[in-house]
Length: 99
Image 1 (tube, rainbow, N blue to C red):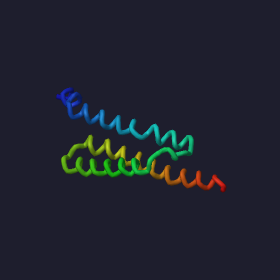
Image 2: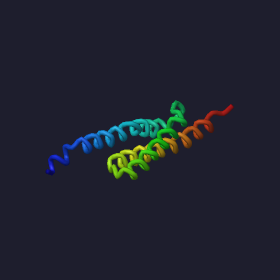
Image 3: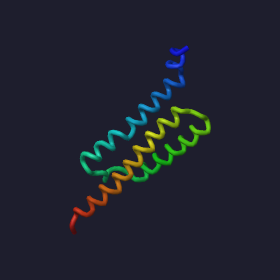
Image 4: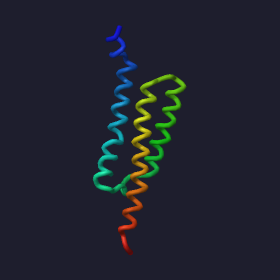
């Protein structure tokens, strides 16, 4: 019974969702942190990703789907970090340009 649970379609697809949520924004968060640049990243895309993740969390709560909840919590955290990076780094890059 334990192996059936581990290899169920729900758990497999949920694990894939969790991993791809991390893969989705983590490389961008890391690159932005290293380069301190986010000028080429769309704020609309980041805001959309945040709204989408929050909506999926709400859906996951109503359907009691732990994988939907967990994977989108990761997505929400990463999108908030990306939005903060965008605000901070774009503001800093405007300060460094003296006209």
